[in-house]
Picture 1 (cartoon, rainbow, N blue to C red):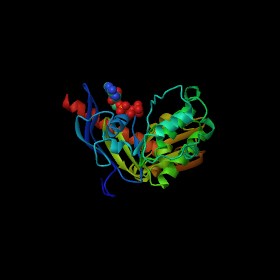
Picture 2: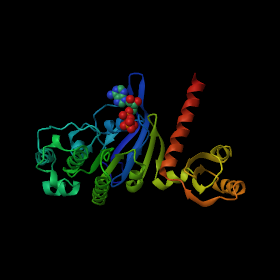
Picture 3: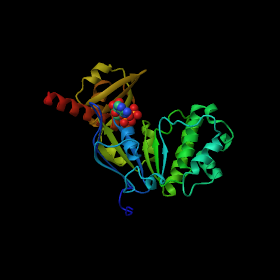
Picture 4: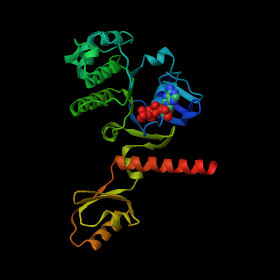
Length: 309
Ligand SMILES: Nc1ncnc2c1ncn2[C@@H]1O[C@H](COP(=O)(O)OP(=O)(O)OP(=O)(O)O)[C@@H](O)[C@H]1O
């Protein structure tokens, strides 16, 4: 049994290979009690593989994998978790209420059906047959199934894919409520605003390795890019030619520029276009930080491969 300061889920130098392909290449991850950790990364980065190891669905080729300080395949550890994976296969003929009752029966101290349904926003679906629900409704039911056992730790693998904006907001509210009750969450998502809205910490991975770990603020700060917007008749090629400019695109008359040294670029803009209007400068968001970080890691990995060849 771990002490309070010990992580409740941990990967230490975890390696997972599929034939020639190394899906996880020495990945480290620690989830503390009561926190929401968002695992971010481009397609194929190894996020689902990392979750698969922590759930005991697959075995590591090397490294340490622990859930509540134990082997994840131990039933004692599994009874304390709730899981919402990307591809859930559920008995199609059962009604939602029956599915929830059945799943709750596997846990020692589950929520009541009404409590689960209310929290996950599926009260109106209980009598419906699961197979006949829309994709977004099925995702909500899968979320209900993940939390019905009153888990201490929830694994949510891209939970809001296919949900409309209202359903997504409701799910975020439910996740916040679970966190307030002391539940810990490991979330993977491609929606950076989701990580921004919910995460205490983010881990960014690519090519099977963690390349950044910290708070959302730290991730943003690490990439000191700024967004500059203005109405200008300057051509994109002119602006792209300035060495301080990272990216530039035009939408109608408006130029959208990202740059590390915004002040220098603003001076150049004002000097080159005396008619320039509606100038705005903003700090870059998580999306830019993420793109920058993963691009740097890709370039470093390309260089390593060239040097090794
Ligand atoms: N069962 C498997 N057999 C062979 N290769 C696999 C298997 N599962 C995953 N992979 C490979 O391992 C790598 C990591 O896959 P993984 O599903 O963990 O990525 P991910 O970060 O979850 O991606 P996504 O964002 O697309 O869900 C990929 O190159 C994938 O093709």
